[in-house]
Length: 300
Image (cartoon, rainbow, N blue to C red; front, side):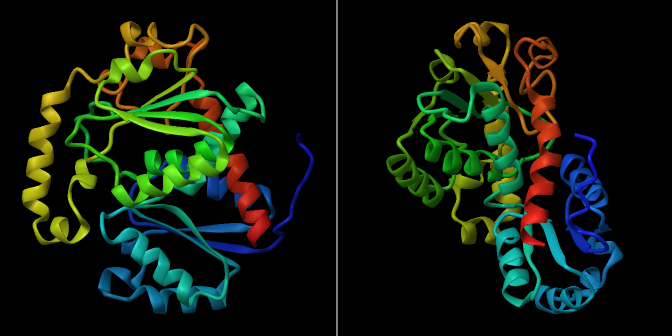
């Protein structure tokens, strides 16, 4: 701690954000500074992306000017394709800062947090990932999908709870079952938040949109209609909240995790989120910095 580690001296990262960001943007910028380099904070309105420049051209040009490209693009049916196009044409490392399918940086920070609080051999740990109500916006599937792919590989037993109208993508669930079989963990699903909380060592109450209810083409062809249907379904499940009653169903030493920002009073109560004996969300957020630095140092 406190020792200089300028592993990326004078190197440049181009970080492109199609959406808002607090933890991801600042962990990348601060991380590059601490590693001795510099991160460019880019958004489409600062670039010719707004005027139609394609991912291929952006990737080629930025590759000639710096040492790494990172991008967040979470638009359903679009984001991962855009990142894949960047990666296919770049000659420097391309890092996903979240797309519509995966959030790898968050997943690694989550895993680091679990290791810190439960040890590096988490086999048999019960983690509950539960859909929760939120009235802000339809959040991507990428966080829970990354978690179900990653956690069972380390022997963790994962339970996912969600209303039937808010499933995860079937192809990701199929991959997660295979990962669980290979890693010695387990994966199961329920439509009951209470059932999922029973005996859990970690609970992760997190809203996500009903994108998995539609295939990509169906959604893109009728985006307005699908969003209206999702909103109608959302309002039926306002009782899906992590509160004191539910937390008492979990293990007596249960910990709360959340990628943040949490929708306070909807996804989780202030009483639980701000309880230092339960909530480890700020450890989790801090670990976004440490894992981001590790990834950048390793790849760049």
